Image (cartoon, rainbow, N blue to C red; front, side, top):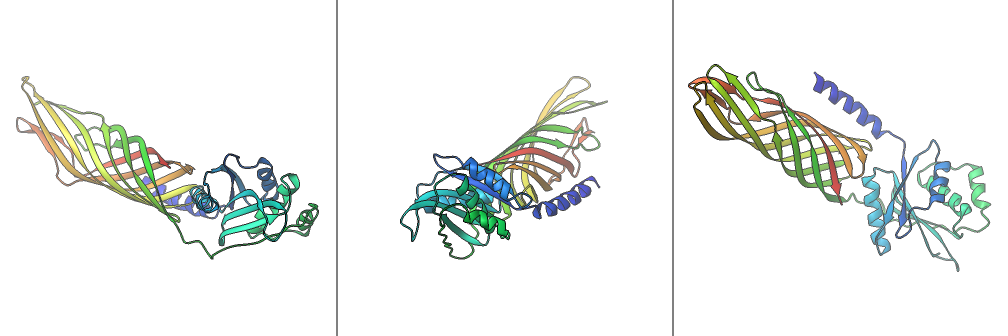
Length: 339
């Protein structure tokens, strides 16, 4: 019941996030960070229209490289538009001016230029152009503000049609805690979980492949015939598939693995014995993530682990430990991606 309620809440939250207000990611061009004046002008012009995020600097040496880098950063930040400004020669005009580049929206790349020197007036004019790129009607007062900037503007738009969705990849590092509910004769366990792998992203779909392991707490059982201790070292591989919005991601995972069990037993008379078992398992779980930043996510995955071989342990013929046909597992971790 708890898992069902969690999934319902996640679906409602995911739907709400998908309809959140638009956002604009403002980028700089190395070695210059995003211009503060432009960021402030955008926040004024886009009040109640869109949120404005200050992003990193573009490192590409060519314009085409910067365009690709900006689109990747926009998608990673789940922003509606990514924008940056460069000083360049204007097409059809003798002087140089500011060129506003916009990625996202309805076109692959939009270039808008103003024949103005950097300053507050140029920041206001550029902010209005970004507002237009968002598809928002500008008021006559806003148009007058552009006209009062004191210099003619030359604008051009270049596009090759809608951008084809790009398939992007990154490495991932996953670290956190795992909890396992015991069977009738086994205590609950907790441990540290880690995984390394790679992810592929296409539009809002995210896939991950990874290898990992757990370091679990020890199982200890005592009975009339003696006591038994089991140390567990699971090794695993897995695949995850999620649908992402700006703030949340929802999906599922399949995680085949091996439970490596080192068993040490001692009878009531003091006789000792040991054995080693390798138990193949499959973990099936839904997964919910909270997106903290374009590179960090908090994940929660409650699921069911199914052993392909059921294991029972006895001392002097008397059952002591039964690992059961399945066990509940919950994972809480932080996922980081790079680059």
